[in-house]
Image 1 (cartoon, rainbow, N blue to C red):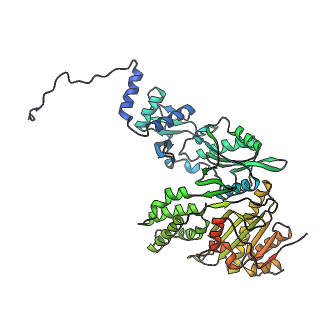
Image 2: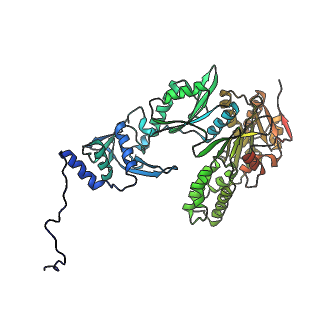
Image 3: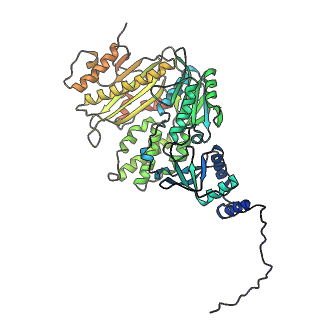
Length: 532
């Protein structure tokens, strides 16, 4: 059956004229582009820039034929808009589908939060300059090739762009020659590359953090470097910056910049001789949109994770609340938990604070440690332990270095047992901080504080405890006093123990003063120390 007759007339001259290229290869390239490349894509330039760098570095190699049984992974482009409005594309492998991932050893640590604060504190006390360096496409600059054969399945768009860049038809698959983003072990290659270069220039690894390095001179640190994947902090004298510059030579980077800058989500700036650290930009970007409502457990978990990130950064005052809410599962979740989390988020958003690192007297430094525990306060009847470490001087001025609030992994049979365990853990960690400060030329004695009169009397006297585990921990503290590793053990009133707010949900004016002014009063009921 014939269709309806045409209502419009068409001329035989209604044709489109195409201009042919001079070579067959160019025709193939143009054909691939016309089918797979969207010229109106706002990310087109950033995608081409990313793939061109991959080709230039030799990260990918075309694979016309893939061996039987080879590992083949998918790939995709991740597009983001940076804070300055720049479009950035990252080509990654879908490593979560890698069948060999579980058999791959990973050693790619990052600079810890407490080590970042130690560096900021040392810079303030010593008066060192602080600089920041950002490496470009760090994983792709690894020294070594990938030690196993992995192939990528390319999407038509990526294949078209690679054909344009290489000026030859690109196959459906590519072999990964050098570590690529998305692979489990790529961070290990880059970490080994950068740390090897630093060690070759004389930098020594810190004992407490494998991503902190010191440059030593006559047994004393003259500066150092903190490594966070592709971002580094450099501090010290001119010799340190020259050594770090030699280590960075040959690796593409954006150069060094002075304060202010953002490192690991923390804005660091200098104001009136003090270093100020805050996360206000992160609160505006990531936290503020989620505050109005929480409609289910997924949104609850998302907001909880963001607040947890803040609590380990610049808001230790909310640490206990977040840790307790972290024990909430999908089965136990109720609207009460959502309400408490929402009120905490509103508090953080309304009361913006910054951690102050004011100059300290370098002749009278001391490490002030507070510990406390809440016996059997968790729903599973475990105890909650908490401690906080400050660097201060003979005045009330302090530098916040670290705090923690966590469940006790060991069994505590009494209030004294829980508090003693918290104090020993605090002593152990603070001694590690003390060692790092000593390598930086700061000889700071250790002052332990507890609000337990039982523990204070037991350490100061020759008391013998019936429980063996408690006795061992007690002997550790006595030995520390006798050997001079603990300069003082002080007994403070409960309201003056700032660690109490890390184990119990209560208002703590001490934290407000610490975060807003960098001050903590030196109040105690009694103290014990040994003299020479």
